[in-house]
Amino acid sequence: LQNLYVTAQRDRFLRFYRLATAQSLAMSGLGLVAALWVNRYAVGWLSRPDYYAGDWTTLWFVLGFIVMAWGEHLGTLFIIAGKAKLVSVALLVEVGLMWVFASWLCPRYGMAGVAAALALTPLLVRIPYYAWVGPRSCAFSLGTLYGNAAVVLTAALLLILGTFLALH
Image (cartoon, rainbow, N blue to C red):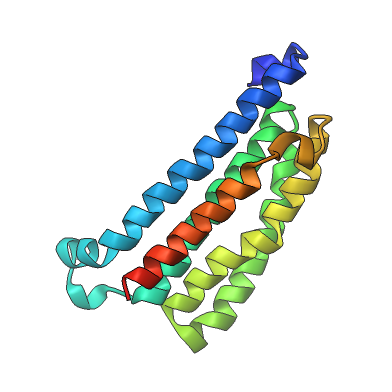
């Protein structure tokens, strides 16, 4: 992708970037659906069954992993454009805000609160920042770069939520 960007092959870059976006979201979604199915058993097998933090904690962690995968994919634009320093701005704000949210939610909801903070904070900081600044750092617009990727992300989230509800 970086080679296509540097050599100004915009059409090929867009085609391959969109393919990488859909593939990244689909694969992370499928992997995390599997995690919903096996987490309880894996915790019991690797440690003790009473260490399992609960279904809501698992769901928050799974959603957090999807959000992190999406955020990391969005962050590749900064690397491709040679502007990696811009990534640190969002991450510094996000880490501070995540600590505040986790500190506030943990006493109220335990591990599920920490997992919720890990899932929601990137949605408030990193994702909007990367979505707004990332494409512009490569001289693209958000719509030009992502097209149907939002459909794939929505499908992945619905698949995760559907799996969670089916297990209960």
